[in-house]
Length: 262
Image (cartoon, rainbow, N blue to C red; front, side, top):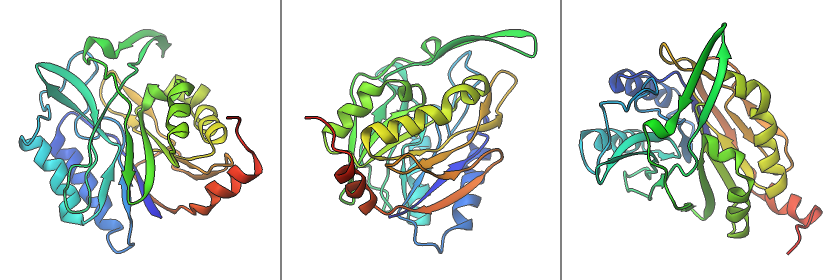
């Protein structure tokens, strides 16, 4: 299955972000890609002090903008999140659309990020709970016969969530992300490789990179990791789209070598 991950520096203005995504999709439009994985907050990135004014609601303008990306480029879009207004509360929602624009279902980020750290001599505190309400359910997506367990950023730290997906038959785990630079340097590669190794799944993690605004700077290094823990793609720093052909037979090969307890 040929997939692509997008690494980008999303800003508040959704129009800037959409234009950037379109340019990336045009770049690989002839490569027969099955699915493109987008990062967290790809549609509009606020400064974390409040919600973006460009909230997605079912079938509103912003919902249609995301859906139309899939339809225009005839490619499925998986895992990327956008701040969404649902029953009067704001949720960090991962949207999934088929190449024809069919809504494949969504996942609402369960575990919200909170940190207090010093950067450039200044103390910064980020608490997603100030903006978002957490989701309460997991989501295993059945995509063209491949089962994908959906997660977002801080969910990566909850190994029990990925194990639940594995026990339900997941072959791929995805974590759209906007990891901060300090936590990214310390933990990003280790956590993603761990989730791949312990669950014997491919792990796909599209990430934000760069200075998104005056408050938030993100680590980048979007990764694709195979079930043995080998890093197939590391986007490192900068923006771009990265294509990888996943050999799904690798999953059964690894699982036959290392048999998990029942």
